[in-house]
Image 1 (cartoon, one colour):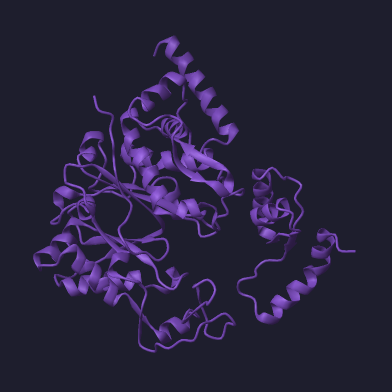
Image 2 (cartoon, rainbow over the protein chains, first blue to last red):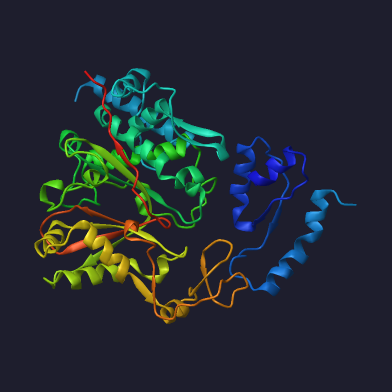
Length: 73
Length: 358
């Protein structure tokens, strides 16, 4: 979240990605950075133990959300 | 009990409830703090109240001397404990992992504080029986002063910025004194440039405390092998290597010393014998190391570096990854491995406790 907010503030479009159990922390971190409404993508947990194919599936599933937040028409 | 005391006690309870409602506690009641009580703590140090003891730029927050004093008072410290708390914060800043954000991590760590020198007697820090347990105000409240500072100065509250999956009971407090009087060796602080008459705190981030039952042997190699087997458990291996503080009871320390072993002999033995075979690591899926994070993972993972070793694999990167400390009662062959976080080498952050000159 911090990286996403700092990149946006530096003028670089960015989307932060968290897994669902981090929702509360993500909001707390955005608050700590004075950006409580910061939009990010939340995906199902876990990620660390997935296979390569499962990772690809996660990316495919999140892409529409990611592009929407980026503002891609 | 006279009426004014009852009235005062009710006011104290209201203050405690107020603090709890604000989220300024670890779940246990805290001591109400007034400006005059705070001044008693600040008078114990030569540091300016605005001095920063530990900063976390990623949160844009810092723990100043004043915030450390407020939280020491909340924790139930006596004012004369405060120089130990200040040194503990300095040691944690030097330790490195807190500044890098370990207190936000899912790993769920806590600071482990080891106190050496004359301050132990002066403020009643326990170094003997039940050294990890409860019952001693200085141990209980100095460790808690750090925990409350983490909560209140940095806002690292569970379910918010503190993302610990399970945490550790050590989060409430984890502060011991070394039992220098019953140790056959010089104190920890004297290994790193201080003298026995100095007082010092060494703070290390820890995940777990695992005990070792070894009442059966007089052979130092057997005891050392028992300890090394505990250090090398695969569950502790997140990174390529780990580190540990071996907290020996006086009985075990004397067993080693009477066979001629020094602390560095023990550390060297741990380095050589805290090992797992490639097959044992593979059985847990931890035989390889990630090219990106150096975390352990299976050899068939796309990030895995090639695995060459088939024989014993060391889980410590050097003898310096092991600290040897003596603490506890001299009544049984029981010791502990405090699993410290991350690979380590080089000297630990031994920090002098500076008291204000009279």
